[in-house]
Image (tube, rainbow, N blue to C red; front, side):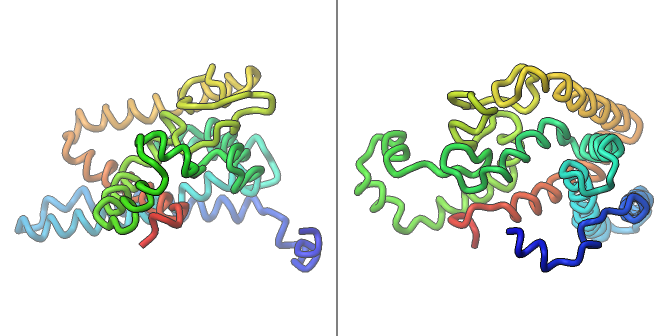
Length: 262
């Protein structure tokens, strides 16, 4: 690893706050411009034109949202700037805008990088062993292999479920995490929530950070709800929810387990 780092120019490891803020400002400008355009979709003369316009908006706003998500991700890794306080504030604000618990995710994501691919300590996409899966289905391993030999319909259903609900289920119930993916010394982690400050996936000293994450989500949720009372629930659905689904589609696709990839 050190040999690889030595081969990369030193300036590649130096972050620039000004450059990072310009990227953030660019994505915010894209987001605002798309929202402005979407608020005028109702002026289009026909229903098919409005449907196409909303579909195009949702897709491109989802791309912009993914860019914002990645910037917040870099804040979590400390790569946005040399100033951790600025990183955490911008990461918290940006991820909260996308309904992501910034500090909660930052903590477990750091463990994911530390134990990537570990069958017990990785925090995401830890597969069941054959014995575990067979016991859950109450069948023998040989029967299980036969049943799962060619199941495109099942794989397709799993893919859809993963893309629509996988990220949310991970945050809510910590699904797919390893049984020992919690803090050092934690014996077992199962079905713990990223929203719960007293969850066993966090240390006692981290509870304040989880509360800050939840406060960010409550603020954003309140903004979305209040906006709905002004412009209507359907407009909020197309303006915010559809791009939100696109964002997490791209994020889930980038981290999709190999057995679910087309």
